[in-house]
Length: 510
Picture 1 (cartoon, rainbow, N blue to C red):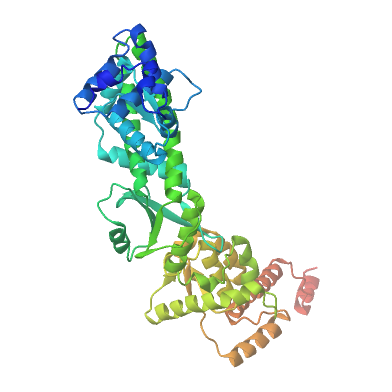
Picture 2: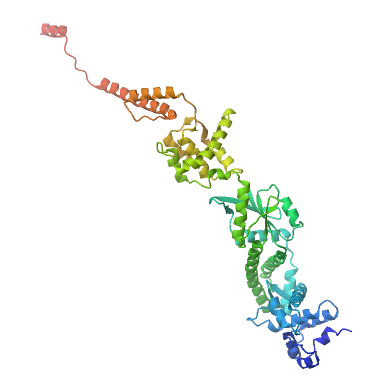
């Protein structure tokens, strides 16, 4: 026949003499030494736990743990972790510590669920009567599931990952949006970072299958993170309860407890963030129905390494840029290359330039106008993923090779105007890019010779696209000079010699 809990816990340490060899005086048994000096109100929770033990609702180990937590409540130097509590209730040589540790965690979970104790991370705390009352009221606060999801996403985005951009191997930044369990949060981009919480209804295999065809990095948090979500809900409940209680009348003890709850909640959030970092570092990274091989365990490095593989798989034409990115400062040298000298950038840009020129020629055959804005929209998305200035560099390279012409408001830009137009991104919707019109080289040479003879200027461009505007500018200039000369001549007084008939007439009059 089993011994009632209330009776078994009233054994005093001297009674150990009657126990089998190897029995130890565990820490929790010290409670019996002070029981008689405690008021009934101060040990109400323990008395209730002993009654629950007699009724089969709590185990003897749970009651022993509750007593141990009572004894260490105000011992600040003691950390009431499951491991340390296991040591306190170790009462016999030869006991399997591993199994005892599991039993301790199970008993602590039951005590927490029944509001005998509270937990903050891995630390447990005995609740006084007043604390127990407030803790139960906190647990009774209703929160919407969307509140918990929004808070989880906020912590993951702002405190764990801390960025909305992934860095590719070429150093280029790729923006991404956040999702949690299929729900998008904030601004979305072509790439997504999609967290899957342990509360999902799908298995890992199902999560993998569902990821097929999506340009996203799925992060399946481990099952152990389920405990984090419970703490997250408690965080929100406490936050809401404390705000509500601030405007109500409270006793001095309750006011102190509420203040402590606020401080504990701030620490709880920090602790949740640390546990989320660990969870992300141990998560499964999934893309296009497969698990990615990423070894980094630091949360931020793991996410960025995973995105590196997603970027490579999504933007298959990114390699056309030769693993390089081009800046705004590279435009002048590309538009105006030195005669006969080809830089490394020119060689790299030949391949992407061929693709872009082919696109322009195809659109030209359909009589479609292609603006710089449309080129940006095409080449920043998959399968290209080029950044804006690299696209501008490709256009500048083609302009420098006289393979395209750029127009604004029906006017073809001179080579000297192209760089400024490419730098002014606000003009992109009106900047029309088209293949260079083909000219007969014999005619071009003859026309150039004519312009040289006409202007006496030997430094005339060989660029066919530049010859026409240059001839017009020169012709206008010379016409203006000629008109100016004629005008000056009309304004000058003219001295004409007197005619003979005039002299004769004046003499007769005299």
